[in-house]
Image (cartoon, rainbow, N blue to C red; front, side, top):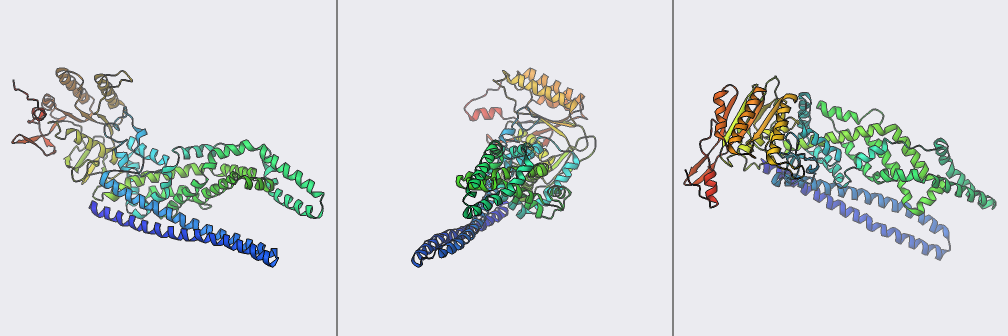
Length: 604
């Protein structure tokens, strides 16, 4: 199945490369034709001199300007198409690398790592080789934060069901998804805080003294200057008035220099990017949506008056006009005739007052769609994955058939069944070293995180309640906090016991409790913790090497269940099947593992 998906991406990537090459040739053709324009101008100069007629040169210059502008527009069009198809190729190649190597050009979520979070550190949700790196298709910073928030905490059941419907719809639109990703791929090269800074700027109103007068005068100024130029030809005295007006215009612009600098500090650097964001919004606006969630999101950026893409394009044009000032000669001419900088600053402020709220909402819509297409990528790339049923009821349900870890490659993945249906149980899982206990706990945990975010999961079927996962697995000491391993374990246990009383429906995953103390205290402490969890009516799993813990099933037969992972030893070789079974483990392998590294353990 995966090879079929890979072949499709490869074909798409090849087609994108062919298109990019074709558009590059067309762009180069128009670039070369621009040289002809310069030759045409030189020829017009020669003919004007030979024929002693300056009007030939004037006529040819006008023709050349329009010709050159047309060639530039055509070249820019083909350059844009080339860049689009180059980006499309990159997006498709990334999907191939993601399937084959779990590589990803998108952010891995490193900044979201939190060792004190309920489960994200233990379940590899963020960072290198994480679930976030595997799933993420968000190019914008808000998109990354949105996806991280979905993986950080379970959503309410109605939200999960809405997301599932939206993800299903997007998974059936692979062409749209790839196009949307391609349109936003440029964001990977933008500053992380670009959108945040833009929104802050748009929410900050600049006070422009005499704004109404300046706005009116900016429209009168070019006609006034032009009139004085014409009068100067016939009345030399008018030249003095012209000089005064030009100087006054320039001084007027200089007096508002600080306002221009404030606008340029943030807005001036995002004008071109805004036009690219507009194309991303167009993707959403132009598509017909069926699921309630996607339809509602699209309505936030579409209205009867003007779509957000057109509104953002307006701002992009205004900012790009402000950037004319970056060319010194053009800046002088435009400010003398139009008091250009002031005119654009006032226009931008008018736009801000009318549209800043809609723009903030619009970027949140982009973030939502990026989070949704990230989850949809799982269903597109792994069509055999399923959407879980979200169970109701006051008790706990975590049941699955052929459940596998999504970050383990399919050829190496071993799937297991597990059933906890509308009940309260603590499951004790015993087993040998490397037999699969920890991986199984993480498999339950990471699939539950996906399920409660609205994503498909790696199983044939699954039913799960809306639960709060709390893990106790990778307990580490901290030199910075002067914390020993045992103290770190106590802190984690305290957090777990407190959360059972305060958080809704806690489902815990404990892997080898109290490793930082001696075996007697380890057993007694672990037994006491489990019994306290039973008293609190808590639900979850405890993986342990200590067979004595399994004896709790006899004391609490209605609450505690025993499961195990075992090995077979054939001719001194350990055979693992990584399959969970009911009961207690009888075979352990520490002595064999020590013997493999040259340490013989004598039986006493």
